[in-house]
Amino acid sequence: MQILKCFPGGKFKALTMSYDDGKTADRKLIEIFNRHGIKGTFHLNSGLLERDERIKAHEIRELYQGHEVSAHTLTHPTIARCPKEQIVQELLEDRMRLEDIVGYPVRGLSYPNGSHDPIVRRILPCLGFEYARVVETTNSFGLPEDFFQWQATCHHNRNLLELGQRFVNLHKKQYLYLMYVWGHSYEFDNDQNWDLMEDFCKLVGNRDDIWYATNIEIVDYLNAWNQLKFAASMKFVYNPSVQSVWLSVGGKIMEIKGGEQVNLT
Image (cartoon, rainbow, N blue to C red):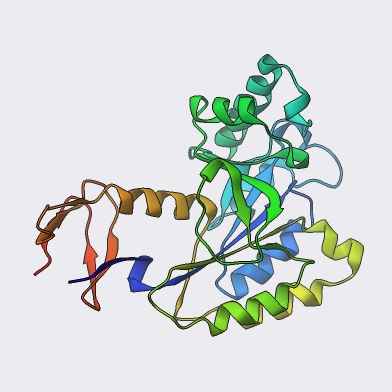
């Protein structure tokens, strides 16, 4: 009997979007996402919110509702060049300020200027961070091997529609696929190419075979899956987490609800 990990609902494809800096163009980007049922993670610098081109604090909770607000450091320094004390201040203060605004724990990060090193990565879990996105990309659809060096599939200006079409066409259910797109919303204004994101979202959005998730939802789901407790005989499984996890058991999709033990035979 073969047991395989699935995304929620038994799906084998997931899509997540990741956008930095919290500029005012996020308003238009979120409108496009919402129209197509797509979820994004938005990485904000809470110390820069009062600048003219930024989303203001009073707007954040409502604007990003249904998406994820994540950290991007307080003032966007190249943090691998900073003293450890400043690294801690930039990360922890950003978390605390954003949490006061959105009302939930902020547990993710995108590295400002793509800057990180082993010292920064060791500090992150101690400050309550559970993932961090880098700027390097893979041009593929694999799951992250290291949540603190999480590589996206592509920047939106790098073969987005071609990769989107490949993603939509994937059909081999023996694999799990994740498409992860990153960028800055203001780039669409600068490059005058909002039609690129419109076309991509039309292509990949509102589809029954794709799980649309924020970055932290993917982290939480994969962690919950990895916490499943299987019997040595594989005859039953216990889910100690609070959220449901889905399995393919001999080709049959099964939901293992939080706190339940389920027979697999």
